[in-house]
Length: 325
Image 1: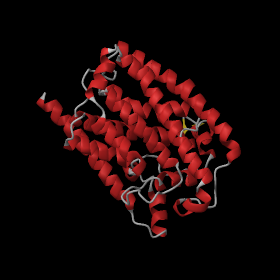
Image 2: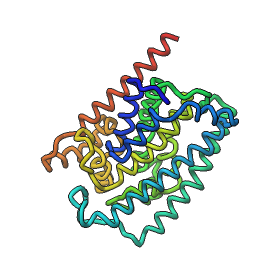
Image 3: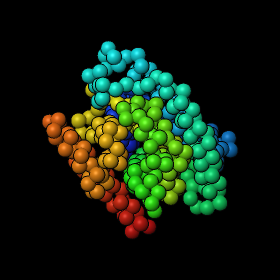
Image 4: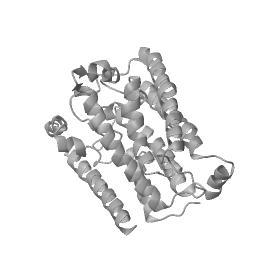
């Protein structure tokens, strides 16, 4: 079993935070960080599996399976439970998912997964074969410290690439309205549910979903186990942001899923995930004003400070590693 150390505990807390501290994910987090056995990983390595397979097969498979399992559960909850029990947790109580669009949504997502995500993963695997930009697949599982630092790298790069690519998709670039041509598809649902988190144009699937998630892993040569685990929680996290509910177990310090649901209502604010880049650029101002009018606690700046502190800690750690090398 993997050792229980402070680094692993911190990693587990980050993973739980990504999914709003859902009690349903606690067993998964415990198993991944403390229950996965070294001998299982050794057997995979001894069987001849390489970073090529980890990148081109395992990563997209984990993302796709996680998406449909969790998205399906959220759909069932929204379809069969919401009217009687969960209305008190819903943001936009006057709106509901149009069930007649379910087939359209499934086709769009499947096309994005099998005609964008799968080919993209194969290209990344080839890139890793012929260049230094690749994930590593050593025989040993990552240490708690390595997995923690790599998780911070994934989060930081995901936020940077996603924020600016998402903002661009709401803008005109060289006279081309990217929102009209590309991003408008995703905003067809002003009151989203978890299953439509990746309902989008193929170009958006590539530049705003796939690239932000994997860029940091390739640049920093992350451990395959670290990126596979984070891929799972990134999928769970984006569906949590789109679910349309603020569950009772979500931390009061967490500005999501309120933050992203408000983006789907207003379109012109809240472009990031963590919130600190929105705070920096002033694109979260409408959301903060809305929260203030509702008399809600200003949770967004606190969340931004926490995530910003994580970014500073990450950069400081990298600098320390470079100077001590």
